[in-house]
Length: 387
Image 1 (cartoon, rainbow, N blue to C red):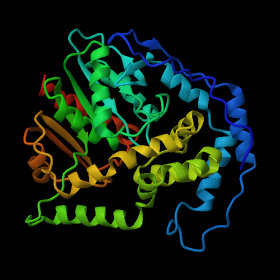
Image 2 (cartoon, helix red, strand yellow; image 1 turned 120 degrees about the horizontal axis):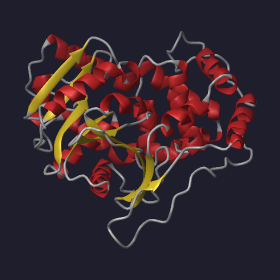
Image 3 (cartoon, one colour; image 1 turned 30 degrees about the horizontal axis):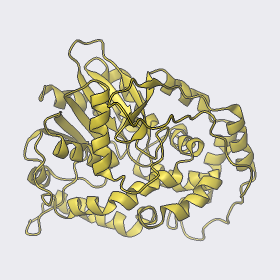
C-alpha cells in the first residue's frame, strides 16, 4: 500500500553535540498529531488481507483471525493517548550521548543516596514495556530508561557499527551526563546483552547487573540435568520452528522495512506473533508496542541491531565463558515461560559472582508487563545485596 508518507512532526532531533562533553538534557514530551492517528486508521481500513492459512492454528504463523481482531480494535477502540499519558507522567529528555540522540525517561527518587538504575528493553519492546516499573522502583532507585538507538524516540543511526558494545558505551556516557558515577543495570532481551557488556567494559562504574535471563550455554562436556536438557530442547525447537524473524532482521532488515513501514497490518502481524507467543499480554499491551513502532517509523532501524549483534549473542549461548568472566555481581530472574532458561551452574562460568538467583513458576519474555510485582521484588532484593 502506498499513500502519503507518515508525518513525524512530534519528533525533533537537535543536531549532535560536537563541542563540550556536557550539555543539559533537553526536556521531551510525547504528543502525536491527530493527523498521524487518522492516517493510521485510514491505512488499516484499506488493508489487503490474505486468505486464512490452510494449516492448523499457528502452524504457519499468526492466524488471520488474530490479526484482524487486533487491527479492528486498533482502528476503533485502542487509545494511544492513554499510552502517551503513561509516558508523560515521568520526566523525559533527549540527551546526546555516545554520538547519537537518545530518548530517556529519568525519574529521581526522593530517597537520599538512591542507587541509579538503568533499565534496558529489547525487541519487540520499548520504553512502554518498562514504564510501569518506574513508580514501584522509585522508593529505592533513580530510574533511567533509555530508548535503544533506532528504537522509539531515539535517533536512528546513520552508519553501521551500532551493536551491543557501542550501545553499552553510549549508556555509560549517558549515565555520566546525567551525573552518575556508579549505578546498577538491568535488562531483558537485548537489554540482557547490553547490560552485560556495560559491566564488562565499565566495571568500575557498574555496581551490579540484573538479567532476565543471563545468557550462557552449557560446556561441551556437560552432563545435563533433566531440567537443563528440557530447556536446551525447547531452545532448539524455537530455533528450528520460530526464528525466521531473527534471520530476516539479521540478513535483510532494509528489505523487511519497506513492508513494515508501509503497512500497519503487516507490522502488527510481524510483532504480535512474538508478543503473543512469548508472553501473556493483553490486546492493549500488544498494541502499545506496535503503535510506538508504527508512529516512530522504527521497524527497519530497530531490526538492524540483529545484523550488528546476533552472531555475538549466539556465541555466548554456545559457550558462556567465551568472552571471559563478567567482573561485577550478577542477579537473575528465570521465568517459567521464557526461552532460553539458563541454569545457575551454566551461568556461573560466565558470571562468577552470582548474588541472587530467582526461578519463578509463571511469567514469560515480558515480565515487566506480565508479572511486574515479581520483577520489582527481584530487582530490589538483588541490588540491596550490592549497595
